[in-house]
Image (cartoon, rainbow, N blue to C red; front, side, top):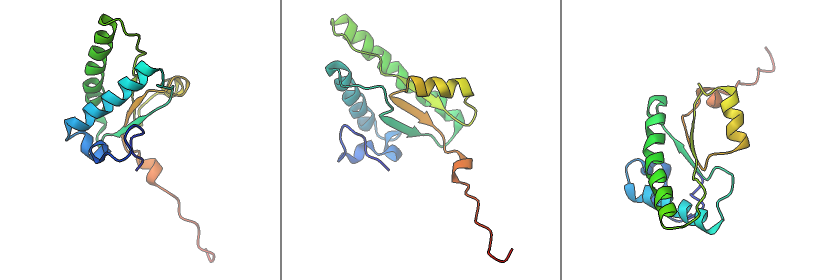
Length: 129
């Protein structure tokens, strides 16, 4: 598991704790906002959030987008130019054109689910079969 790039030593940002620990989420917002305001936010996925259920993925994304939208609005009200911090959901049901769009303009926070097909690995045939 890769640590969050902003604070690699912060155990509160481990993906298994993000959903339980609001401090971890606040630190994540703080880091991404600082990068956005300083011009260091690049077009790549910085945070990968793996949701155990597809049904929860959209709720998680909405719960991330609402505060990010409010932060963007506050920055604008204070005269600060801040690029949007993007979120997206990718599951096994994500359409091909949506996946291509994510590659062309990656979300900074990607919410996804474990894909059973990636964990399946064909076993090599036995030498005598």
